[in-house]
Length: 238
Image 1: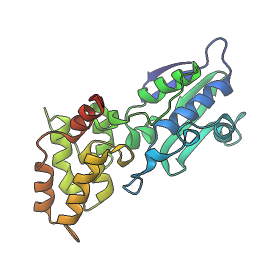
Image 2 (image 1 turned 180 degrees about the horizontal axis):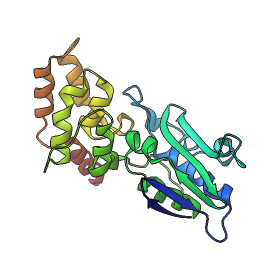
Image 3 (image 1 turned 135 degrees about the horizontal axis):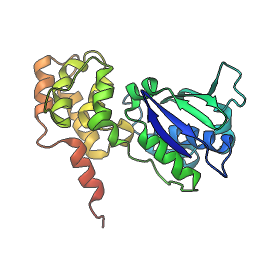
């Protein structure tokens, strides 16, 4: 499988020795593996079984339409088992497909990690637990996703300052998503320390927190929680 960006969209090509169904199947699986639920009600999402972390072939095939019956759409994944997939792929020609970038990027950021995971699946590489999607809260992915909410990154603004700045304005609109942006990760990937910060915030701000309370909460982190979580996960365990 090969992919490249042409204009605004990514194009996918079936290579020698591969079939269209094989390539489309790994794209479906990769989209599912890297998609995350929306909101904070998924704290125990990590407790899923292996079969729920990885999609089985027969389930993946249900999202593949070959030959396409609806115009030229071959993959149509909106929300799957609560996960925000937003993956729509059409057939351009034999062995040639195109991802609808805008639909994907506005909710999930840049698609390169998705394509790379699909290539790994094609080679037989499996996973035993959730793959980190922290890239969705960094760099261009962060910029693309927050643009969907009407926020623009200021010149020279780093990721953490950007996330802190928009938090008080996004929270009244979508408190769950605002908290995920502030924490720099899907609630499904938060560890116990992250959850503790969240529950402290809930206890201290019963009802509707004021803008000043939201600003002070964001400023209360000495270090970007995304970076701290990464350090904790990398630390050796006894």
